[in-house]
Amino acid sequence: MHRMTATPTLNSDSASASQAEVSGEIGAIESAYLRSGVEETQPRLDYAPYRSSLLRHPTKDLHHADPEGVELWTPCFGERDVHPLESDLTIQHTGAPIGERMVVTGRIVDGDGRAVRRQLVEIWQANAGGRYIHKRDQHPSPIDPNFTGVGRCLTDDDGYYRFTTIKPGPYPWKNHRNAWRPAHIHFSVFGTEFTQRMITQMYFPGDPLFALDPIYQSITDQKARDRLVASYDHDVTTHEWATGYRWDIVLTGANRTPVDEGADH
Amino acid sequence: MSTLLTATPGQTVGPFFGYALPFDSDSDLVPPGSPGAIQFHGVVTDGAGDPVPDALLEIWQADADGVIPSVSGSLRRDGWTFTGWGRSATDDAGHYSFSTVPPGPTSPGAAPFFLITVFARGLLNRLFTRAYLPCDQLAGDPLLNSLPPHRSQTLIATREAAGLRFDIRLQSGDDETVFLSYPGHRA
Image (cartoon, each protein chain N blue to C red):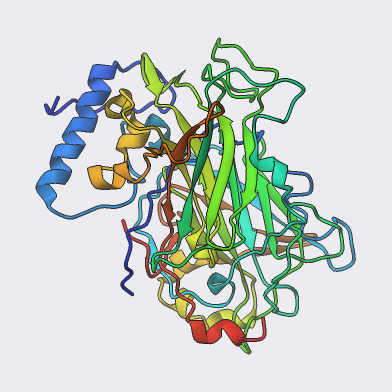
């Protein structure tokens, strides 16, 4: 798996490569990363095994900016924006969706461990058969008329979010031949400063597709990849109702000093 | 700045956000055509110069007087409250568009800018950039002055009859948009 491979075909949407070829590229990048000894914590933007990234990653280094003005603040969301029932993805239609009902909950904190309170969390996901309600998803798996797969909530005063949903299925995509995404839920999260804004994907423990998936593997460091995997938590599981998963989110450090809190914004 | 905890990694927004993240009037920070409204818009292109039809942009800005908003209501806009935040998915031509007001300076003499995040299929993590208003204050801006002139130009919007234009080149030569990292961000 760690052999060097020839330069891949630079076609961002052709499904021509085999899984073995893509896995070879993934393995070569990981080997080089392990040899480098420099820890990485985020996905690489330039990651050729994910073909769609070839023409969409910047070629120049990110430029350092000292945050100022709006960069030290973030949009506010409130009860007016999000109804409490939007956090339950299983009650949006007349019937109950097919699949494993589950609760996912966790805490959002900044890099200093401070709770992100009363802030917006958005999720979206495929149904139990691995199908999205999206016109571009042509995977021949059934649409569930009782499942849209979109939810929102506000974190509580301790930074906790909580959704009730259905466990999503894995699904095929066109990165390469016989490519399958591990089951995941997309999360969109705001912090206390807009420079903490992030979108990511939460995965499920023990997924056999992890090693094969170039999006998950674009995070070269195993400890960092593990941060995207929820834990099964029997204390979240509820009697005769739903299984439970816990997944905490850490945002980047805050730059606004507490002294600013009384400023006239 | 050192922090206690390591941040959770980002991942691409993927191709299927279109039924989930856009919402009614998401890109209308003020009603289009209302007094003082401008169009802030542009095209997102890839390394082949082709439009990116599945990108999602967000802007966060001060109001026209330079006041940073701290009011809710972005997701259910009432047409009267300026929340400072908006979201626009690109169309099939890679075009995004906001109806808003030009931000004012948040401190005396500061060069006003829109803060932008870019998400897209194929983009493994979000990108940040600033879109500055063309104005006299640019000459004293520390960020622009930390870049060579041909690079700082990529951060300055162009004035048009209806407002401001700001194109985003994800991958290019000298005119590739400058994307930003902040203290606390890591590779």
